[in-house]
Image 1 (tube, protein in one colour):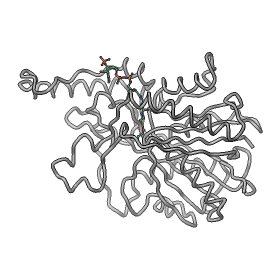
Image 2 (cartoon, rainbow, N blue to C red; image 1 turned 135 degrees about the vertical axis):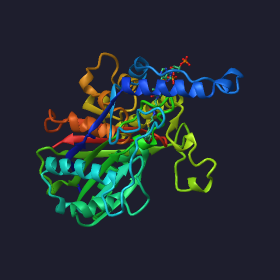
Image 3 (cartoon, rainbow, N blue to C red; image 1 turned 90 degrees about the vertical axis):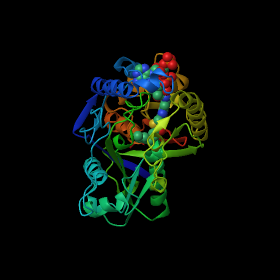
Image 4 (cartoon, rainbow, N blue to C red; image 1 turned 60 degrees about the horizontal axis):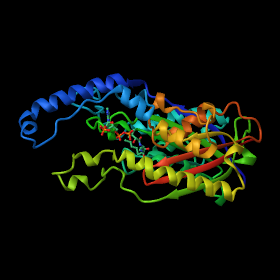
Length: 372
Ligand code: CO8
């Protein structure tokens, strides 16, 4: 069975946090910390913290700002996290709210109504709870039929979920699938960590994946081929999990938040990406030059420039692999989908594009798309 992506959707949270705001609050936290630990610092027991800088953030990552669902608390040096009130179980969860907005946008783009959807996959780096699945909550709110489930593959959640959606359609368990990526990253960001306090933003994206013979083809892209790869690494890690409460001494330790060895990730992941794409292209008898556009994962601008240079050489036009992380920061699995959503309108029938994710796991997902 042929399968297409017939629509995409984007939900942008209400609040922005600029680099300057973030750095100003981080530096106030540094002053407070160093003052509070003056004696231990003087005796060499602990090292003084050093300031962050907006210039470093832009140069090292390409990030200029990020969106967040809740801003209150993030910039308070005594708090340094979004203050999110817990809701009663009868209310929609925050991720379901984000998911519904992005899904509604994607359904409009695909000219599909919610009751025509028979599978929802919520795929992202974290879900707010283990069960009932956020996807089933969204299924109830949108009144879709069939079934729904959540899946987590960090930055590759969207591409791996496309893989699942296509296989569900080919296997006959679904005809029309909503893949939704409600990336609520700010509660897991360590705003006290100089190396990573600037990296993430909140956002939600959605895709309608459906049988080719059912689809409205106006905005559709045929899924030409897909490839997934994983390779275990501790260099991007969060030890947050359901067992944390059983060791009260460490339940709130920094390792329960996102942390990484950014330099190592950069060095190790790049060759894996090239190798993975080379294998995928060889299998499909494709060359990098065959693609009109590369919608790449959005973690770091320098990483994307390296990938493009390796695939296509020097002097490549910037619209070949558009960057959205300057506006959104790293939004885990949603990044490449935002790039696709924002930069697909100029495609003509038969032109090829590549959706590609890479990140924690390590995980890499690539999807070759052809405009219908
Ligand atoms: N301000 C000023 N200076 C700084 C700062 C700062 N904030 N941070 C570091 N520096 C300094 C360092 O101290 C260092 O100084 P020196 O040279 O004197 O030692 C210098 O700047 C260089 O530091 P780095 O080596 O750390 O800097 P890099 O140029 O390597 O850039 C990056 C750091 C931006 C982190 C870069 O390494 C990077 O982006 N690597 C790729 C990482 C990546 O792709 N990670 C993917 C993670 S995302 C993912 O997988 C999703 C997980 C799930 C979502 C999680 C949601 C919370």
